[in-house]
Image 1 (cartoon, rainbow, N blue to C red):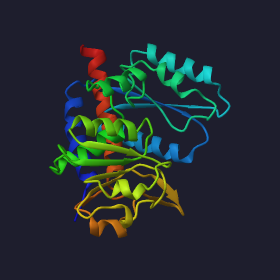
Image 2 (image 1 turned 30 degrees about the horizontal axis):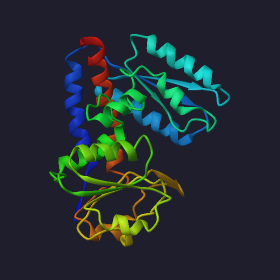
Image 3 (image 1 turned 90 degrees about the horizontal axis):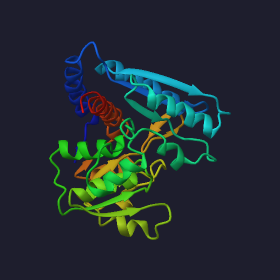
Image 4 (image 1 turned 180 degrees about the horizontal axis):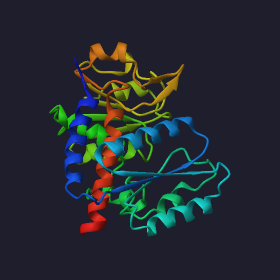
Length: 279
């Protein structure tokens, strides 16, 4: 069993990215985060993102909006960022208020600045096999798999979770790499019957320690995308202690996929900068 080291892979990518960005000095890519007040988890993510941006030479800007902000006010803020030539990437911190129309909001982000890959155009390009921007977490999962030389072609992959930001785009990425893919979720009946067929199992359901040894085929590659906070601890969707002995490879939480996710966002921002400045 091999524990997959996302921190090490992230450090390699950030070192190389920093060198690339230094070549264009004094110019710098700029990433804008928009957040609606009220989520301590989002606050923590923004702080980590700002630290990561500073590490590689990306300017990090942040706008915190009142929890009473209207959907139209948020869209106006997005429109201003779209028109600002000094802003190259835009991300919206989740979650958004339940009453907001997420499709309408993400549709307003300039697709060339949509470094979270959630504009309908970017999701459509991913579906067609010609992606521009792909959400950071699926990219992190794929990079971690490839960095360990794990073959994908012909393998059975099962993804637990169907969100637009992880489950669906990751399933498409795996499909493009010639996996046979099943998407499962909270309403899947006899879930273990599906997951026990997986050569590659990805847990992205958002429930702490949901995946136990009863869900894992011996020798499977297990990727844990879960970010769950309980008792002041960060917990994954996988019960590491029971699953690790069965796995050929397993990503831990923390130190696995999450360590690479922010780095993939930085790479997307660098890609957006080049697209807007040099194409």
